[in-house]
Image 1 (cartoon, one colour):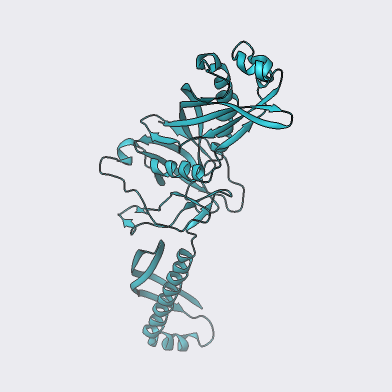
Image 2 (cartoon, rainbow, N blue to C red; image 1 turned 180 degrees about the vertical axis):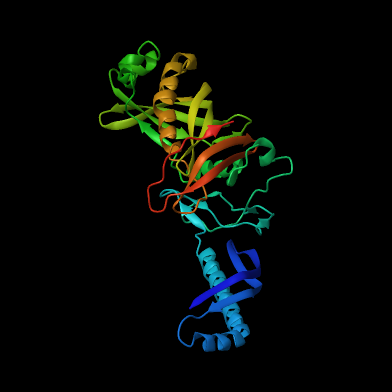
Length: 361
């Protein structure tokens, strides 16, 4: 027997909406029509059975149409369950998570679907509050990117600002420095000509530095990179007889540029110090000439703080990509206050994702 269906037409209408931060897929209407059904029997009394088959061809076609419609309904239901099961948060570390709940209804065009997610950093135990940032009419990815890609992901600078606020609020932006490239700087003997009062009160004692970020870092997207403004306090401690004695506090305001890059499916970055200014906040060892301790400030920034921040930034922010898919030939575009990633996508199954470079313009 030879069975074939030619010119099978299937139509369906679905509604995809945002339902409390998840996507709801509803089948509104569907239809299936078999225009050409061919059943050929061979051998024996096939001619007799062929007459019967031809007589019931309409009923057989209806059965095929009904079976296809049932499969469509089942497929839509399965897809709806999958969409409903998508997580609303994505953990970053023990402090922060990303709010990946959907915001507003999807927008459909002839060749694309646009989905909005909150994307903001939240504390691991924070209650979700869906909020997103609409791309304005003055921002056009297609205008900046003449070569269309398979996927476009846009991140508002408030995503990065929310991250700095979460980590600052969690009191994680602080460090104790007890090692420097010039270790002599962490002994009062090295300061005897810079701060005589310090050496006079604490001769030849070891020191360490407590570094605190004093306010949430400010982050702004520019036309060529990301500018970060950070204020820190550096407390000079003397280690005397097993006790930590704070003796002075220096405040530092510095700016750094951050070049974005794609590592795997993450948006990562790399800080480069631009400039800094220093002033004395308080002192228990008399007045300090801040210009004389610029070398210490510079050493802390260049050898401790910036490298540490870069070690965290290189981990990156996970971009919303499905499992077993990876960005390929990604390109990063700056359109303040947005960073846009345009990329092709490759399917790797269960293989490890490749780390592919991004091209920045």
